[in-house]
Image (cartoon, rainbow, N blue to C red; front, side, top):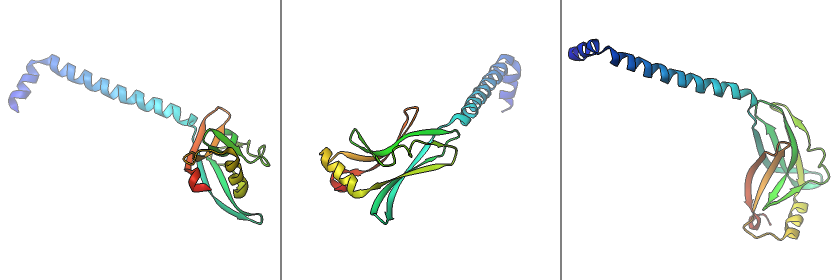
Length: 153
């Protein structure tokens, strides 16, 4: 160990290179943290939740979209994505187009029999995926995989 200390004292350039590399590493970490912190207020995230609901009309399905990001999001469409076709609730289409502030949510409810009839009319492959689907006005699509057509019928 003593020989190493003597060698470092004799080679001043070695210590300069070591300190320069350490300073460069700390600077890079500081820049990465600064960029991450600067982008944080503009983070856009949506949580899509699905489930069943029971009403006077019978059993239905719902899709709930919750803004879990740090900025407002304007919802354009909420529905089910069956293959490449979007199924929306035609009775409440304009109610789903809303602005969600941080932590707010909105839900759309669907009659399960109407959805089954629509899927039957589309005549998709039994292996076509059914997904809950939310799209904002910027074109970002949020999806949640549910099941395949043959399990839904």
